Image 1 (cartoon, rainbow over the protein chains, first blue to last red):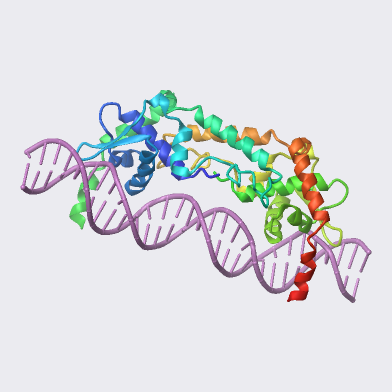
Image 2: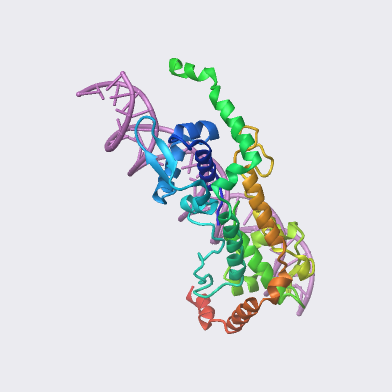
Length: 160
Length: 160
DNA sequence: GCAATAACCTACTATTTTAGTCAATTAAAA
DNA sequence: TTTTAATTGACTAAAATAGTAGGTTATTGC
């Protein structure tokens, strides 16, 4: 079982989409700027999210990504599954052949744990997260920052 | 957050100790044979378990390891923590400085998840596991197998 | 039609972690 | 005094993570 920045980035990006994508598509460049995630890395993650039908893409100027379902119909567990294989805690992937074709001593414990984690993350939708006070506050902070971009950025081209 | 074979091996080995270590110390060679875990790798894991005061060692012939506390006072979460750093799901390790010194959009979600996992694994002791029917059955199977070692093993020395 | 935008795709890479192996040393019991 | 078994440290192959780089394709506004 693994939960690393890959899964965290994916959930963060999807939440950003949920927060900003109500009227028009959101570009990965926007998400990259607000959430400090590498654009190229976001592209890889969104390729998986799209294959798993969690987002729809719109190409061309003004394009970007939209959620493919309503916010209250997309759950955190799905997002992590889409980029991360699974939140399974067993070594055998649930096939119960952990020790030479037979079940190992702690198999059932890891099964129980997997159910616990999956149940928890399956109960949280993007809508739930958007409603949270802390999320609103942090989003407001991020929006304020991205509307005042650092003026130094326009100089970097001239420096080349 | 990571839960890989390292943590699973550690819990399995500790459970083996709980099952077989009531009267005398259990050697890592015994655990290695019953649980199919590399002896050298077990040595690494038990060095950490000993540093975290979960086991005591007895050197010399007939030596091995014992639990340093009663079975109902050792919890799965402690074992994983001992070998695995932690079961923390946040990227910042709980310090809430995930995004340029400030809290990131999904920080609270990962905190909640960490609490969930830790709560679950802190509620399960080695005594709880020993009592489970499936664990008893699997342990019986493993004991039967290790009492009838494959005769081929005595030939390997002669083959060299 | 043309330039700009932004998704899309493929391949490559540095770093870290995992899951070990190997060799040597130390302590205790028989 | 030999054997057993813990203890220590260094080393390694393979995999996963967290990217980077460079190009192609589709769409829009001018």
